[in-house]
Length: 406
Image 1 (tube, rainbow, N blue to C red):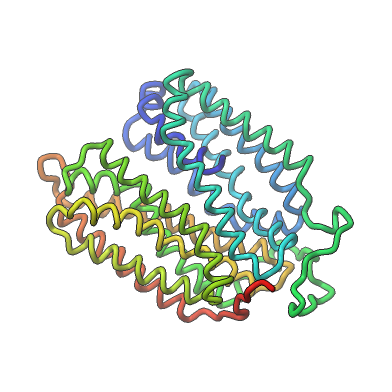
Image 2: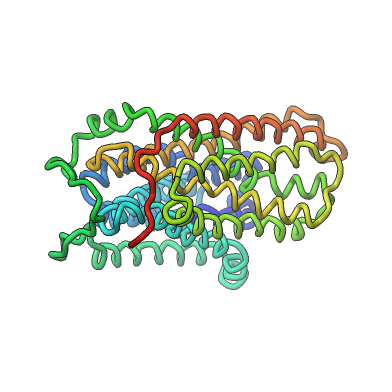
């Protein structure tokens, strides 16, 4: 639902524009006001999860998100619509951090990367839900009722989480699953730290900055392409109609779903190296930008299909980065570390979208379209960004190799 809420305004943009009389910059503000609060809430969300536990944190924050979505659905003015959008960003900001903490409590350490990928893949299904199905719903009952239905669904989910979810097996009187070769945790493990001590502990770990820099650069370029420029590029340079470009972009989402499911498992069980998977995938992903940067003419359809799928598939090798950082920090600040890494991911996405728009605006349009040279230059910047991200990951430390199950 978090992914669906994030992408829903993109489907309803014409309706929102008519309802509130919005200009293009105001539409951009409305859509972006989910991402910025989401990003900067991550360290706070991590600390709150460490202090309050996943169940209570998720229940409270999902309530905020649901109420925010209802406020957006009922808003009669643009100001209230913006406030509702901010609330949805804040309310959904805690979900991944809390899920990571639950996975760390309920499953073995060697399974963490696999579970992270599976969770992210399932979450990405919201991107599909917020496309054709939501458009059909809006055509039937209108955007306000559709958004209200999403908000009510989120509130129901908050109640279910509060009722059913448990933070750890100990809450049910069960033993926690531990690998036979896993070292015993110190007595302090699991005890929450004060806010600033928890955050300082995470920020003192060098891998936080190395993996965070990687996340900012790689995820920023991916979000920029998938969420902003893929369709205009395919239309301006390759002459596709809007529906054709949208259909092709679906391959990027499919690549993400497949990759998010696969790469955690590959890192944990097959190759047994998280850093190797991250770096290897980023190298292949970098070649996507080389291909697009060199293409001054239309690419064959088969090549475009491979490029769109490969962009999502190989970029999603970021999944093991969470497990890599998890092994680098003390157990009592795992959620804070996950939240801090999420901050880098989402801040990168927000930054690259806004910076790329300003950059392409500097190129004079040709017959109303951004020139090919503008896109090519932007893609070479993306290649350089990914190259730097690879060097950052390469300098991180893999403290525990993933091991196969017995």
